[in-house]
Image (cartoon, rainbow, N blue to C red; front, side):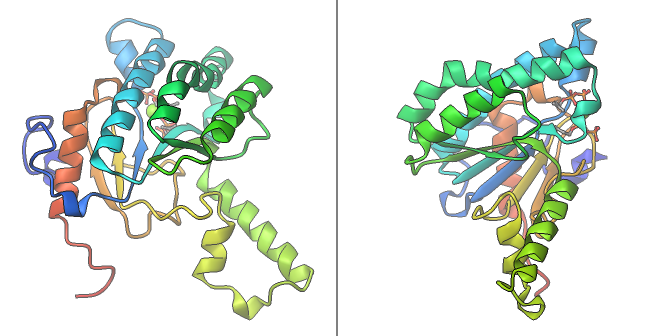
Length: 253
Ligand code: IPE
Ligand code: IPE
Ligand code: MG
C-alpha cells in the first residue's frame, strides 16, 4: 500500500548524487515513530528503542546539514505522550540531556542552531536546563536550525495562540478585522520558522498525531513502514527524491 507514495523499493537508492541541489526542501519535519515496536521485536524494553532512535537523530542531523536543509524539525514528545508509563516518560525526559551532552560541542562547531517548539512549563527542570543551555550556546549560529518539537501538540498551540490574539484585541493592540494568516502563524509556537516543505513519518502510521496541523497545510507527505531506529540516510535521501518529483500547485494549475 505504502509503495503508492514512493517510486522504488525503500532504502534501495543511496548517496545524494541523484538529488537536485536546486530543489532541496527548506524545512523537513519528521514524526519519528516506531521505537517501541523496534524494541519489542527484539524482546527489549521500549526504552531500548528510544536509545537507538537517538543515534538515528545524529545521522539525520548530519545528513540534513550536508544537504543544505535550512530547518529540521523532529517530533520528540507530544502533549499526549504524558499518558505513557512513568518510567518511559522519565527516560524520554532524560534523552535531550543525553543527546546534547554528546552532541552539543559538535552542533556548535557545525554552526547548528538548536530550538525547541512546545511548552517548556511541564518539563522537568533537568530537561529545561539542558535545552536552554543548548539554545543559548547556539543562538548565534546561522546554519541548520535543529528544532525539537518537545511537549508539543498542535491543538494546545492553537489554543494558546487564540488566547494571545484575544488578549491583544482586549488591550486594543489589534482589531478583529486585522486578523489574517500572518497573525495566526506568528502567534504559533513555530513563530518565524517557515512551514515544513516535507513531512516524513516512519513506522507505517498514516496520521498526524496532533503535529503542526496549521503549518502542514501545503506540505508534501512521505510515509514509510520503516521503524525510526531502522531509518537510514538512504531512506532520508529517498524521501527527498520523491519530494523532488512532486508538483506543488498550492491550489493553482
Ligand atoms: C516514537 O516511538 C517515539 C515517541 C513517541 C516518543 P514510539 O515510542 O511511539 O514507538 P511505537 O509507536 O510504540 O512503536
Ligand atoms: C507521535 O507518535 C509523537 C511522536 C513521534 C513524538 P505517537 O506514537 O505518540 O503517536 P500515536 O499515539 O501512534 O498516534
Ligand atoms: Mg508511536
